[in-house]
Length: 222
Image (cartoon, rainbow, N blue to C red; front, side, top):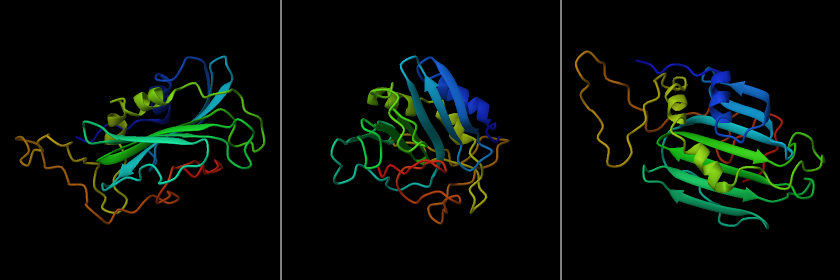
């Protein structure tokens, strides 16, 4: 049976349950009716508002881009392979040219076989160039960002992603190493279509590399 769709409000609630308590203002909440479910919101936990961007999209397989060979001054990047075969990258970026003093952009990106997701947080308003920072640091530490993107609830969203735009097939991830994939379905069930090994085309406007940002957000270049 196809996975149940995840609405924008449901997707937003799933994320905010994992964030610090506070007042949330939602700028955009798109569920699995879109090619890339994504959230853009502002959280004020009483210590200054912070901006969040979160998205989940298909990932056809292959190697993900890891930490760059060189990082800018004030940046830090770490990556790790998880027990289930997923790839986790944590990036802590400092102030860039044109950004207010003390700007920080922290992110966690998780890539597994079949889908990819990223959570970014800013200690400023990234849509307002030149506006001062709103707090010294974003509220979530790198370990906390990692815990959010690794939460198993996102498997439900990934399973409800729309059909592949090229093949028209449903999302069918390959099991992690050490897991057995059924080749013959149980009686009464039809065989799930396999995820294509190649020929996948990103949705319109989706970059071929680097972090994905909603229209209007600056591309941090990390």
